[in-house]
Amino acid sequence: MYRSRDGRWTVEHVIGTAAEDGRPRDLLRVSHSGYQVAVCRSVDEVAELVNLADLELVEDHRRPLAPAS
Image 1 (cartoon, rainbow, N blue to C red):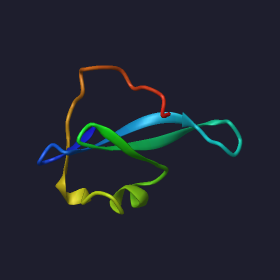
Image 2: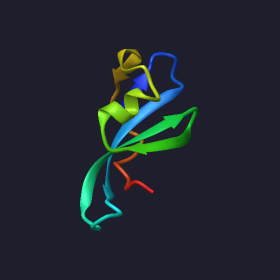
Image 3: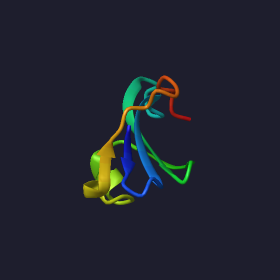
Image 4: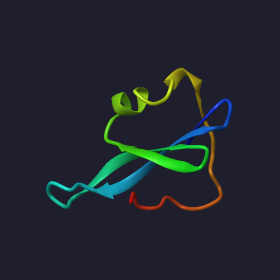
């Protein structure tokens, strides 16, 4: 998981299902202040929401990865 230095933004890797073909795919779940705001397919999509230079890698021991909703 990545978290912004101010702690408001998080980006998590999740495995989701593609609407087009129903197959699993890698997705990036973006949250702001604990609320999910987007599920992105690429880092470029994340960069439209968050300054990537402000993100730091953090280990998340709270829970295992959950499927994207």
